[in-house]
Amino acid sequence: MAILQIRQAIRDAMKEEMLRDERVFLMGEEVGHYNGAYKASEGLLEQFGPKRVIDTPIVETGFSGVGIGAAMCGLRPIIEFMTFNFSAVAFDQIMNNAAKIRHMTNGQFGVPIVFRGPNAAAHMLGSTHSQAFEPYYAHIPGLKVIAVATPYDAKGLLKSAIRDDNPVIFLESELMYSVKGEVPDEEYTIPIGKADIKREGKHVTVVTWGQGVPVSLKTAELAAKEGIEVEVIDLRTLRPMDIETVITSVKKTNRAVVLFHDWPYGGVGCEVIAQIQELAFDHLDAPVLRECYEDVPFPYADNLEQLVLPTPEKGLAAVKKVLYRG
Image (cartoon, rainbow, N blue to C red; front, side, top):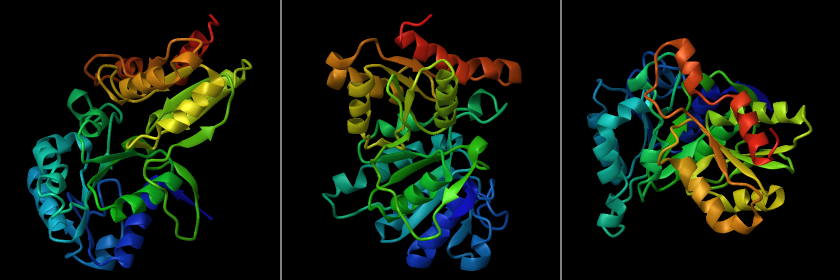
């Protein structure tokens, strides 16, 4: 068992898959000579050479399209966005080509490609660099969407994503690349579409993913000091979603809070709430609540940014509210 940062777990996943399958290659801005903007591809250029670790110009539409074409021809590209904010200019390639080509060609072409990079707010990056893109991509049939919060999950799920025959959106976090955790020495994968119970509890279910996971776990720690046992479910995969694990938990606790790093209107959080209400309504003893960004463009100033973000204290307030405590 090794202790790795998330960036190291991602690097090891890519390295192992590139060694396993010569069709796998990495392409993106600064992935090669600079070792990646966040050092997630450190050493890969030296090991695999410039034909398999490809530095690109600042043209996301172009290299996303090249990657999709390569996947159609039988290769297995990993496309790194320096930030998913920059994927916006490649949205047509991802939405109308990567996601739909298998359907439009009746299965004659597959697109085994992974688009990966940091998603959602970092720190003091302002409105245009703090988007959370999971609602955009999870909305589209034909894409799989993953959001990771631990080194173990990052490695196991990225390996599964690279091996998958469908296009996968793999969401990381700039603020969490240095998070450390245990990673097995032996090879392993994690099934796409399976949630993980990060903490067991019996009073309230908190459903979360990505950057929301550490906030939810700290919320559970605060709640425990008041005698409240919170069950924290990390969805990990947003499409397809493991709603069965969520419903099983809600039937046990009878209360739910969805805590996530995104705006409240029209996102994945809304989908989770809708499915809980549809599938477990008779088991609910309180309305399902959400704790997320305030519904405003993201500010740059540090003090204002903190007001927009979900926090453990806000999470605790939501937990107590569904318990009708204060």
